[in-house]
Amino acid sequence: MIAKEGQDITLRCNHSFTSYQLLAWYKQLPGSSLEICASGTLQGSNICRVTMSIDKENLSTQLSISKVQVEESALYYCAVRDTMTETQSTAVSKAVLEAQVIKLKHHKTLLLTYPIFDIPSASCEVHSL
Picture 1 (cartoon, rainbow, N blue to C red):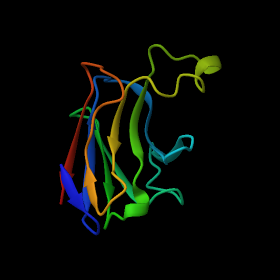
Picture 2: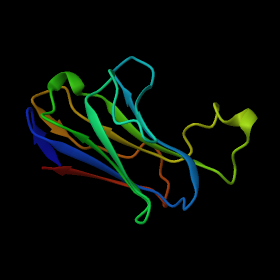
Picture 3: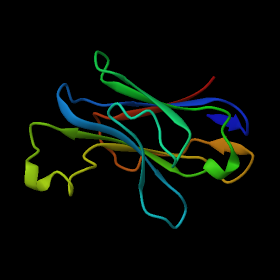
Picture 4: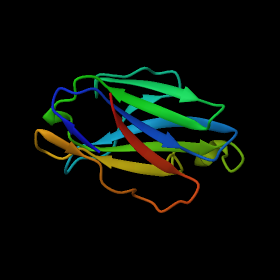
């Protein structure tokens, strides 16, 4: 998928968990650590201008970015934490159980690349609105 600066884009992530504790999107700028973009009912933050939606019936989530800008070029991660394998003591260290990555290239054209983990139960799509 190719998107030009100023377009609206939607990143879609499918997963296989029917029951989960956390569903989140993270953003990673080049040379930086992961920062949370959206989680649960959080509809965005000062880290990125996003809208997150969750479709529990179809086991998916979407992250929409309105009028995407070059400075928003980053790796975007979709993460799901399974309730069946989670305990209170390991919640922080196991934040990313299932993830996909979307790379928005540092140019006026934004490009989808590859998944970070090869997990058969997860898939990711990008749609230009």
